[in-house]
Image (tube, rainbow, N blue to C red):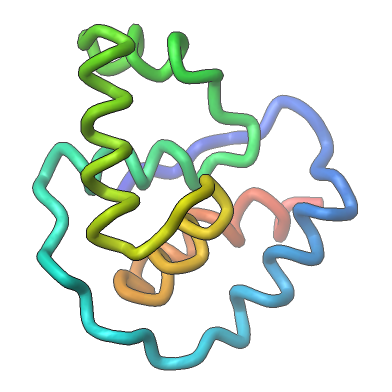
Length: 108
């Protein structure tokens, strides 16, 4: 499990998100399981200070269009339309990664 270290203090919205996520309910079933690469990308998105799309693509050594394709597939499988919806549903389905997200804010 990857642990990322924030370089800026979290926002109030990030604290609220963590509070909501820590009280998550059992999720609906996934349409299809995420691939290993989709999981890797979603874990990177858990970092509230994550790079923009082009920065994430560069970190993964893939093109921006390939990243977008992976995100679109992951969002569809999670039933999400936006990044925060996808993160919310991701940690509901894969609660072992919740500590990844909450760890950023426990340090403060």
